[in-house]
View 1 (cartoon, rainbow, N blue to C red):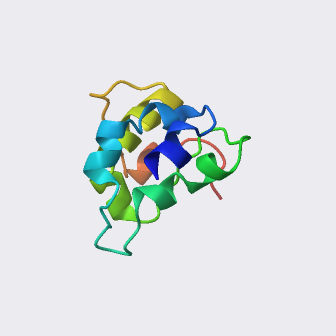
View 2: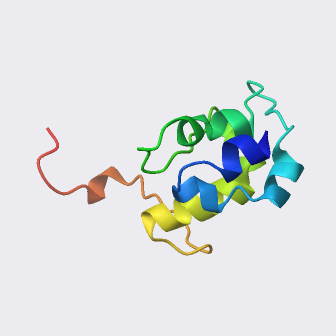
Length: 100
């Protein structure tokens, strides 16, 4: 499957992360939440040649279970470093603008 679908897939961001080694490690894995697989995650990129990113998470576990693929793509897509951290400030008094 790897040879036919991934290796010969269109060039997209996801294809740089799904190496044979990654496929051998994660290709048979299913997420606990919904049984989502790496094959399902990259199905758009392997089926269509006009995908910008070409990889989609099927559930929350996809981000954790397939982090070896998702993390570099997310970092590249958003232009952030691997050590970037998201911070939230839920203090409503700091909201600025028309929030009626």
